[in-house]
Image (cartoon, rainbow, N blue to C red; front, top):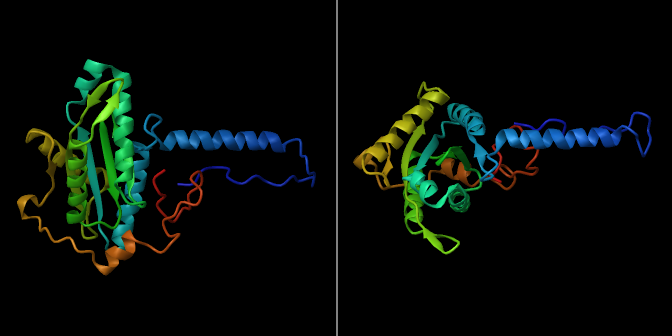
Length: 243
């Protein structure tokens, strides 16, 4: 999704100090700022739900073309309301920011982390089979269990519930239906006591997660393929890196 007005036009009169140029640059700056606001969550700096739906649609279409699956992880912090009610919303905001940074540090550059809403997060995993996505979710679950967040003498810890699903090229599924399926798995994790990972295969999930040649190319592309050269103006044909 390309930011509007990314190139400054040359002065039509050929002047080095065009009287309209400063105004045009100010308008461009404001357009870029508004574009960023429409795509990102102001508290955490992550992409927002609107961007997730856009990126998910693109990756599902890529799956239909290439056959490489797209996986999605939905995450809900357990009993987060208690933190806000006990320590205040400012502390709750700090926890959300720290957890966002932790998630960003645990994913690949081509993955997309979003604040889905409130204390919910989503991670989009292009070119990723279900076993790999589940393994990442379990790693994130374990990471949260051992993470201590310090704030004004307080030591806080948070756990989370995870729903994980994968979309294949054979499926006739819409973006909203895929998200809804994954959300049902998240709700199942919460019903089963929270702080666990739920996915469609359950106990039958094979522990073998070797990377196929096609998946290796998708996850470790040649330099520049998924590189975000301009965070304000990502190329149209690639999924931008997480900022």
